[in-house]
Length: 322
Length: 101
Image 1 (cartoon, one colour):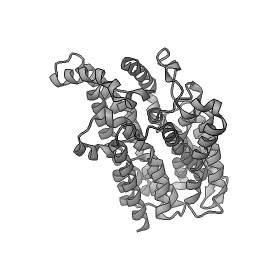
Image 2: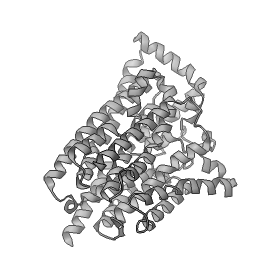
Image 3: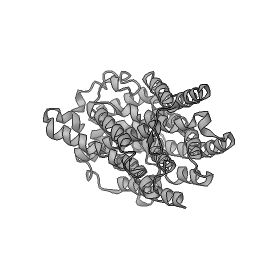
Image 4: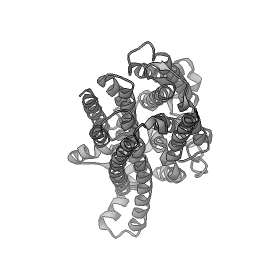
């Protein structure tokens, strides 16, 4: 994945500069069609994921969160997994700050998306404060798949705007719909939350380290439920991540590259089999890339619909960078 | 009120962490270990949350219709169904099992 792109700005410059000039002059023969392609990709992701706000609205209402609170979450938190986690923790009787801590930890990955995006977007400080709100899985996935600053900005903005509008709209409709339904459990809607988590989780289980972490965390999360205050077991289960990481880097030095995610990416056959990565199954090989961009592309499962294309673009971008 | 506190804390924390990523100099958090941990942390949290919301009622472990629903979701994921289909499968199967019980 495009790890090399962000870690060294200089690599990007040669390819960004011409794209920008072409865009500024607005006479570039390529800017029209390529802009349309970027917008098409961005809209596809934005619409598909934006619609899943229904699931959140319904889940929040089913968990006893008020309409105003549900909408406030989508407006001001605007990162799906954290919203679901908070609502679930509150429904289970967790204290407000314990519940918020779990949601916050899930949001930490967005910082790593921002790290990758900041050099590519090249934002002025004022714009940065606004753009930060939209730094999430989907916007990162689309932006990182683009080539050149203009396309990156366009992809980020269109995805962010589409997603923000739809996610909030569908949250409202979902919450209203759930209120109309009455007992949401009778409709099986209490299964929506965990199903969302599972859909987010599945594409991340690419190597042994991920699977060990998930297994350990699931067992800890369940086993500690009866003995710790509500909300705390999830936080303790999160320790599975550093624990597994420690075991992998210290005790299995032979597997170190795999565990670090620093396996030489050139060796992955992305470029030669563009469509072969397929939609995100752990079985689709290339299990050891752990760039967050990859997570971004895969997390929040809907992205899978366009993923073969993303993989292709990313592969191409990588080669051009060199 | 406590719900609003939770919402405020989550909104603030999640926004600041997004802003942090955009604002720190490139390379500051590029240590492989930090990146790897950032990738593994959501795995642990999502796995724990999935397990709890499927097999627990408050602090008691239970096996009910949700387990069947999540089984359907897992099957949909294996079949590479779209996100919304995965969620719909879980909801429909859970509702169906409850209706039959």
